[in-house]
Structure formats: C-alpha cells, structure tokens
Length: 282
Length: 105
Image 1 (cartoon, rainbow over the protein chains, first blue to last red):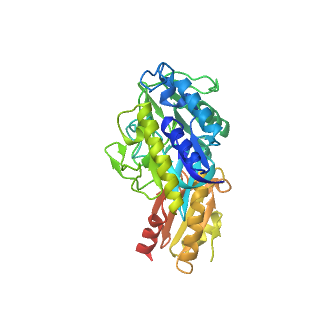
Image 2 (spheres, rainbow over the protein chains, first blue to last red):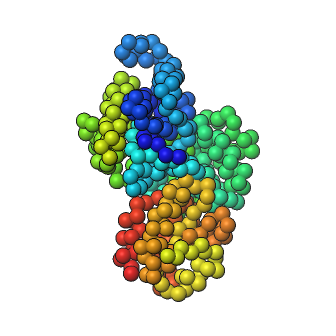
C-alpha cells in the first residue's frame, strides 16, 4: 500500500497534520494506537483549547478523528515498529505488515517514558518490542510481558498460545488477560542480564526469564527511525517542523514543551502543509 | 546474482568454506524483516562473487535460529574463516551491513 504521507501518531498533532495534508489532496495514512491509549484520552477536561473549552480528552479525540475521516484520512491501529528510507520514500513496519509512503510525519508523543534499567543494553538480546516478530523464538521459554498498552494482554495471550511461559507485569491486572497467565503487580521494572536477559525485577520479585517483551503503545522515535537528531529528549525540528532527515517532519509532544493540544494542532498544521509542499517539489 | 535460502546444512557448508558469509534471519510475520528484504537482495547483487549472501527462515529453521542464539529478528550474522565475526540485531540501513562487509573483504 502506497500513500503520499504516513503519519505516525493519532493524537492532535498527527490528526491535524493528516487533515492539512488531505486538504492539499495528498493520500494520508495515520498509524497509531487506539484512542484509549493516547495520553489525551486520560484528560478529564481540557479548558484551554481555544473556542472549545470544557471537553474531555476523549471527546476532543473523537472530534479530531471524525474530522480527519470525513476528509478521507485513512487510519490503521497498530504499532509502527520501524521506518526506513527507500528510494523516493519510506517503508513503515506496522507489526507484521509494511506500508509505504513518500513523506513521513512523526507525531508519536512522549508517552514512551524513559527506558527501563537494562532495556537499551539488552535490546535484541532478550529485550523485544514486538511479540508477533519474536514470539516464536521464545517457545518453551520463560518470558515476562511488561504491559503498557491496551493491546498488551492480547499479545501476552498470543505468546502463551505459542508455547511461551508468560508472566505479566503491570500496575494492575488488565481485563482480557488469559487466567492461565500469572500476574505480578509492578510499576517499575528492571531488566537484568550480562549479554543476554536472565531475569526481570518487578514488584520486589525476581522473575527468571530469557525474554522480556516491553509492550508500550508506541515505539520511541529514535528506535523507530535511526539517524534522527535530538535536542535533549525531543526531536530537533526547524520552523517548518522538518527534522534533520529529508522528507521527515515532526509535530506535537515529541518536539518539546509545552505538551498542550493547541501547540500540537498548530505544529501538526505546519508539518502537514510542509510535507505536502515537499511532495509537490519532489 | 545469488541469494541463498539456507537450511542448517546449507549454512554449515557455506560457513565451513571460510568465505565471507552474510545471513539474514527473518520470518514472514515480522514487518521489519520484510522491510529489510530488498536491502539484502540488493547487497547480494552488489557483492556477487565476493560474499555469500543468504537468508534463513526462522519459522522453518527454528532449531538453527535457537542454536545461534537468535533472540530478535531481523538479525544479520556475518561469518568468516568458519566463525562468526559480527552480528547486527534489528532493522538497520544498508551502510550498517556494507561497513562490516567492506572491512572484511
């Protein structure tokens, strides 16, 4: 599937960018977690969004989604795992599928948080972000799923179905988790191992395992697309919301403070327009 | 251009030849693996006659993947003189692989 613009992130920045690119007659796909997983969905009431005070985050997201769909923006709910430049565009892996776009807009927020101790050191050596990709490699082995998204219980059940011995670590036991899967109440976790994962420390327990699946609702931009320049924890962008990589724009929380809807929508507008212009020049 | 699809025996023979070998471990349900495939095909053409380039389907060859300690795919392993000299885990740009190849030709 080929699109003019692929937007990664379905919050206000991503949908604003998508709307602007559609207005410029570009085909647009938005790849994101379901609305319920977005940080804005947790806002009880947003009072500083100009002209529309008093709506909940969920109501705002529903309006943004309706607006984008009405203009013909396509949506795909899933986790974008990797993006890669190709000749004339980008591949984006959405779990086991691959989509293609000519320009990329990153609006993936900052909800990913800081990496857990041991996460980056042991990435690819037992730490995985993708149950569908790597699950088969852990058949018959102990794995810990660190559930941080609404899809995580489903993915844990999938791993258990493959024959992995799953333990699920999260602040509370989620609905939909198979009753056969032991649950450990844990806010923070630490991943232990020298060269390969040997255990996860979660909720005061040491869980011996060979694999740990960190299932957040989004992959951080640095993991998603290598080579992006950062300014501290945020993506480096210019006034056109262009990153250091040609054809890659960014908007919203991932570019920096303040983490506000109005700022995200405004940046999304700039990113969407500039991405469309970039395509017109190409 | 030759791009080999190795089973355990095929890979053993290629490695035992002592030549520079680059092997991509993948599976069909892995999106990043599918994205890497065109790069591997291109490199097979670019290094034709100099490097043995191949792929291993971890679904069909799970014991082989296990014996090599593959814990995440895509993983690309480089062999020379009959032993592993490097491995790259995760999707990377072509330069990450050509750097290893060029340094070991």
